[in-house]
Length: 394
Image (cartoon, rainbow, N blue to C red; front, side):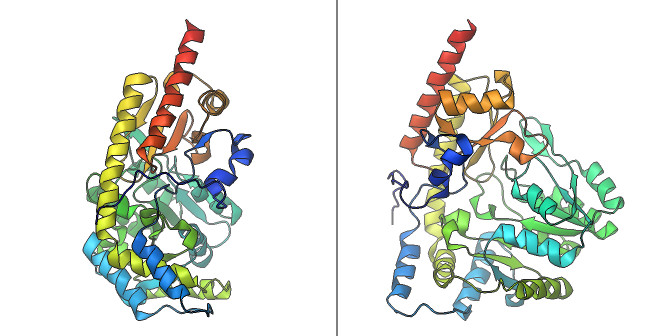
């Protein structure tokens, strides 16, 4: 089947976060929102059909995970990532960010040091602070238009008593697909100093260049000191289903994690979320391949357009995800001026770099998981705003 990713959908009256929070976040809703990390593509037909089929039964009571749920995950992980996951490792969750919190609460204590690697998805930062842990930054190093880990500093933080690393793999923002060499070194550091690694791999299925390597597969040590968080939500545009999973090979870590989830009464799942996950992981390979091809075209279009028409902005080409990290420092604006430029002049709603922590200053994040015509309109707006800016400085 050939899928159509060019169709534009009006999401304004669907309680969409991306549209509904514009006024609060940007001060206006008179803009094109390209910020929240869900896509504007239709969720796959086979996912919708699976949910419709479940709705043919009129009783929507408390729902258990069934064998098909586990089988679909095991098959997807093996076929897509060559990872032989075991059923006992799997725990369903309402989301990956809750999984970060559950990991912190079950495996560390208040006051413990937790490392994050900014610039990074904002919940990595504020969930640590909200849960009374000490936040440590292991800032990424920008090299040749991409990011690398500062592994020497990471080792020092671990040596100084860090109890946990919240790893983002692939990384958001920037879209780096971490190499086996890098992940193995992280595992060596974590094992040497007794640090647990919680690996958010929600963008694992969205790799555009290279290959995603699940952290838990790089060594026996990594397998035994890690919690891996994954979900079909970004991959198949079903974030509203609130369905993700934790994969925890180590039985002691798993028992602590599961005990906490049970104590918080967070174990119930969404009756349609289960159906969505099963359908996505069972039937989704062809749809995903086509979507990634379309996404590659979107990324190429945006990178080429910005490079040619607004050369002061340097796009960081992602190796994974539908998010492009834009280095806007060449515009020589403060972050407030940068926000005003995009919101008031270009009428575009993007994510502000400083919300991603140290190293985010002077950056913006744009979501290109949308029909090409929407991106063409966005780039036209950016070009006109940039032309006006140039005229003012001449």
